[in-house]
Image (cartoon, rainbow, N blue to C red; front, side, top):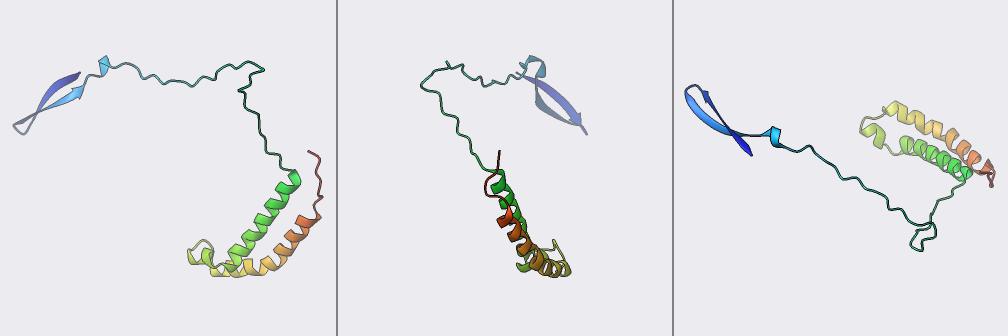
Length: 116
């Protein structure tokens, strides 16, 4: 339901409608409810979990770190868009000669089996 209002400005009359906020119901939001399923229900979905060893995660993180040095030092993109200066790019290029072999050594020296 709309309420009619009128106003005058510099001798000209204008009318406009305002919504009647007192007649509105408070907002309600539906909540999702989980259905209770019996314990031995055949429709129950199996629980799949992704099991990744801590060693593999560490090796992946070291590899990404190493690739970051290569990308920042040799691509030229970072200095071109102004993220790093040309001098810092040259420094990263020189540091990549030390960091990348060190990272490769760490990746291959981590134990193959990890106790979780």
